[in-house]
Structure formats: structure tokens, C-alpha cells
Amino acid sequence: MPLIFAGGLIFGFGLGFSHMARPEVVLNFLQFTDFGLLFVMFGAAIVTGVAFAVMPRVCDRAPLTGDTYGRRLKPFDRNVLIGGAIFGVGWGLSGICPGAAYASLGVGNVTILWALAGMFVGAYLQGVVRSREVPSSRSTAADD
Image (cartoon, rainbow, N blue to C red; front, side, top):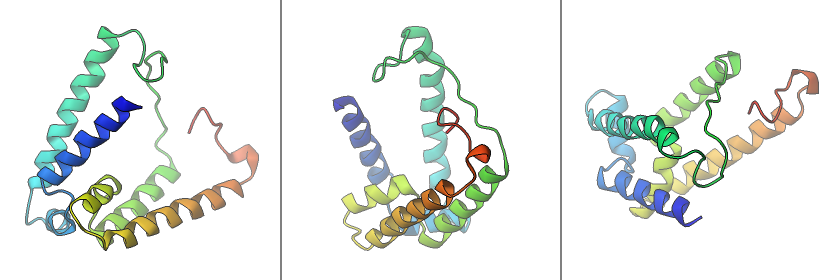
């Protein structure tokens, strides 16, 4: 747990430091007037890619869970396409993605609570819809 907290602390500090926790910065990126977010995401992708390439060679098991390293590929299906489109519309309307929304609270943006409430309600409604699906069409817990 302390390692997870430290990771979240570093993540939140980085978002605040790079101003990515400010919705107007994200909206400027989405309107192609400020490409700073692109560089932040590119930097994060490089660090993550290196960690994913190096960690399995350095450690036999994941440090937090003790599980063996492995790839879990989710198929590109209709749900991924529709979910991604819905996520994108929400991101564009609110001007903030989920990780940055929490960090935005830390920089004093209290109005972001509306977006966070919407995210929780949306996730809950998706869970209700998913639970009503026919069990044979649902993926197993190992696939999710």
C-alpha cells in the first residue's frame, strides 16, 4: 500500500506540475492550440514502456501482488469501440480525464466534483447495464 500511495503522489504531483490538472489546458489540447499534453503523455509512455520491458527481466514476480508477469490482451471489439467513443465525448465535454480530475482537486478546482460525480454515476450505470446482460454473453472475470 505505501508503494501505491507513493505512485499516486508522484502521479498527482506530475499532473499538477505540468498543469494537466487544469481543464482549460486539456481543452486547448483538444482544440489543437496547445500540444503540451502530447509531450506529457509521450514522456509517460516512454517511462511506462521502459518499466514494462525492464521489470520482468529484473524481478520474477510483480512487487505488489507477487503474481508472475504476463500480458493480458483484451480483444478490440464493439464494446471497446463504443466505450472509447463515450469516454472521448465525456473527456471533451468536461475537459478532464479521470486521473487528472482527482489531481485537479489538489490544485483547488472544487467544481471538478461535478465531473467526478458524473464519472461515478456513469460507471455505476454501466455496471447495472452489464449485470443485466445474459450470462452466456458476458466475459469471465479473468477476461475483464
